Length: 170
Image 1 (cartoon, rainbow, N blue to C red):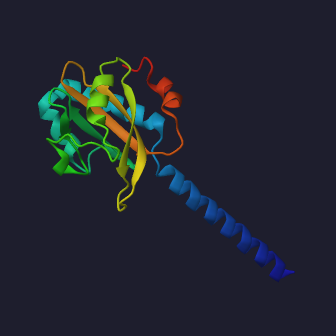
Image 2 (cartoon, helix red, strand yellow):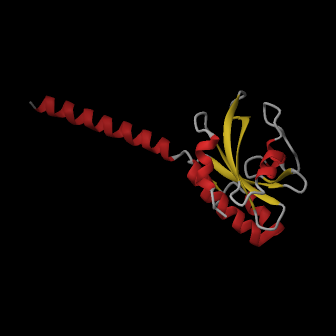
Image 3 (tube, one colour):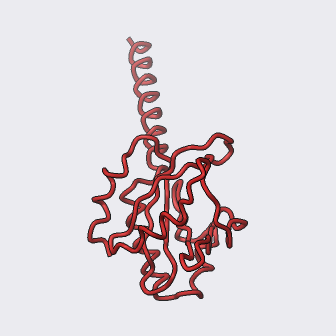
């Protein structure tokens, strides 16, 4: 009898530990709703600070880096990356995605909308060579030329399904 109880207890513990591990992995993935919230906060911060605030978006330990995402900044007057916490070598460049799309110009054009813009682009995941689909949300930072952007790798969410998350956001 004690052996059966022990087996059941061990089985339940294994199930609980397995579920906890899956939950931790799920919690490490940023959601589209979190992208909107972080980008709105970043755009508001950048609208107040202007050029002086760019350095906060170039740091890996900044509040703009969370889970599997981060906020980077585009300078739409120049159509280049203005600040990037994970790849500082991108600052000052306009890099096309793996399909040749100028997603920076696309985001800059769409971010003129008061509710911002959702865009799709293809870039390699960290540590991989093959490009993956990223969906990103961008919002203009007040009267500056800057747009705050955050993105996640996601193969399933349609842009039309997330577009409503940012309506009336600004």
